[in-house]
Length: 254
Ligand SMILES: [Zn+2]
Image (cartoon, rainbow, N blue to C red; front, top):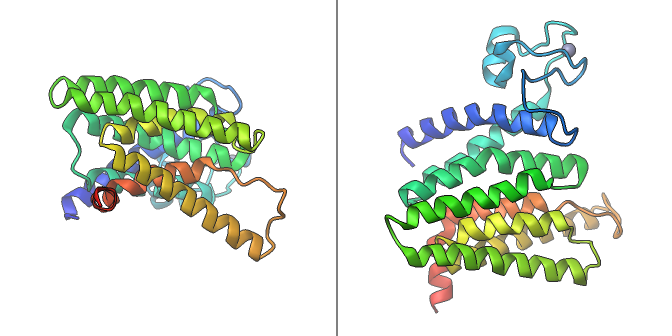
């Protein structure tokens, strides 16, 4: 990874983490996406500097000017996740227009990740437009590069939708319908790059989800009946497969 790519990832990830934070704050409450981010403690609108955790920390140690509390670790986690997801995208050689689809997916993925952790759901208002935008940009990119890849995006979306829908039926709703709808955009985004990416993203999602569930069960932090939100693992798999795509292509070619 070059330092230029790292710089782009830090600047872009920090900038879009503001939007991710806005989605996390407003979408579950069904509030309009207008105005400034609010203080997590007293709900006062935050000053311009506190909109971005790192900048805010430098100006006022990130503290709210009304109640004086700092925004806490969560804001930094959102920012860090946005930067890491952007690193996965910018270090992967992607077709030009389709790279925009992945970059636009970064703040939506970060928002879905934390909304699923907090509320155990993945709102349709985020998952369905994400799938639509991914397919539209796949179609735009395919006009310049490869029509066959566009077919891959559609087939990837359908394949993962069917797979997760079957799991929803088999687990009697344990795998939620939010996961099924998120599978549409992940299927489209990875399917455009090839089947190895679809398979890799799914395998990495289940492996990381399974590993954490087993670790939590073993440490008795959760009981067998507790549900662990699966959205973050699906998203982790989708972004992790980008740098590992060549490995899965080689694996599946055997
Ligand atoms: Zn406050």
